Length: 161
Image (cartoon, rainbow, N blue to C red; front, top):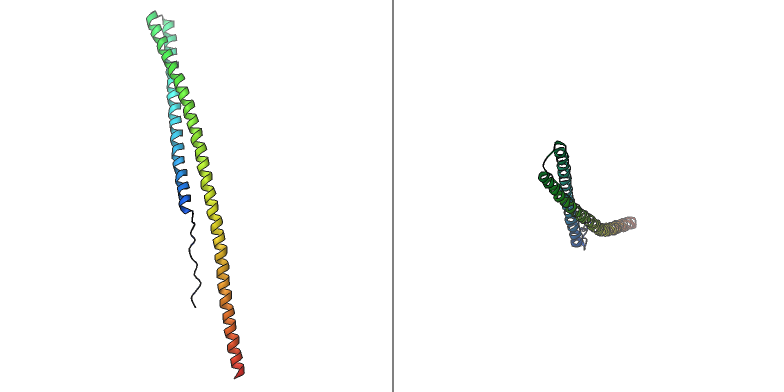
């Protein structure tokens, strides 16, 4: 008699699950890039703030030592330019923070979608394993009853002779 064969599990939505895993991977990369850009924006903003502090200290030192008005005006104008850059940089940081938040939201959504399909696959696998176990048990039960029938028939023939 042919031994019981267990066929392999085939999840019919595997391509969708693969796609969802892929989308999650892309979302992770996008989020990493958004975080990186946000950090670069922070560094740029800190550099501008440091320049403003340095120039203000230089201006104060020059005021103490007595310097001509035109040089003080140039330093003031430069400080105003840096403050404009700082304001612009802060707006950019707000935009970059929104981008990070949006990419986090997208990643959470993609991770949830992947988890949903992964859970469905696990349920289908569990169901498949239960059915396989039941089929295997049925096969072995049938083999046992066939053997019992043959043995009892053989015994009755032996007794009858």
